[in-house]
Each structure stands twice: as C-alpha cells, then as structure tokens.
Length: 140
Image (cartoon, rainbow, N blue to C red; front, side, top):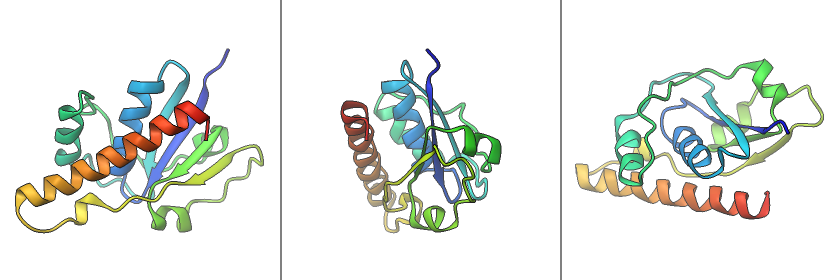
C-alpha cells in the first residue's frame, strides 16, 4: 500500500516544519511519507537540530526547501505550522488534499539568554511532538 504523503509548511522551513518533519518521520515514517518546505528557504536552524538531537531525533541531514507545487498537490495532508504560511500557502488545485493549520510560536524569534531561547525551542519542540503523536493516534 502506498504511504500517504504529509507536507509540513512554514515560512522559512528552518524550525517548526523541520521539527514536525523529524517527529513524523521518527514516529510515523512506517505509515507516512513526510516532506517539509517553506514559502522561502532560510536554512536549517542549528538550535532546532540541537533540541531534536536531545529528543533522540537526528534532523541534521534535512534540507530547507521551498514549496513544490507538484508535491503540494500530491499530498494527502498539507499542514501549516505558522499563520504566515497558512495565509500565504499557494493554491492547492487538488480537491482531495486535506489542509490543516497547527499553529505554534516561532522559537527563532525567542529573545533573552541562550538558555531562555533554548527553553523556547524545547517548549515548541514538545508541543509539536504532542501534536504529531495525537495525529498518529487519531488520524487528525
């Protein structure tokens, strides 16, 4: 049976969509093909790589990609992780694509000490992991 494709979208494909991609691949990669992209490609955020490593998931080889219309229209699920991507997502011409919005704060915008910034990254990471786990359990 062909795996259903999940396409995670964010503004820069550097943090939230990468974290979601990592967890979905780690926890549901046996059931789903997982891809992520952004309205722009900002590169992989090293703090996102670090907090995912702490959670036992290696995303260090992920790449930051711009949204591909072919993948967008082939996906079973298109899931936006920030309001900007939700509002500016390219038009999906395939009526069978299920589009959802899972909104999370952008940890890359966190300020303060390095520890405070990393705490924000961990908070967002854990919230995304919980949402991915709920999706895998309930299918939504």
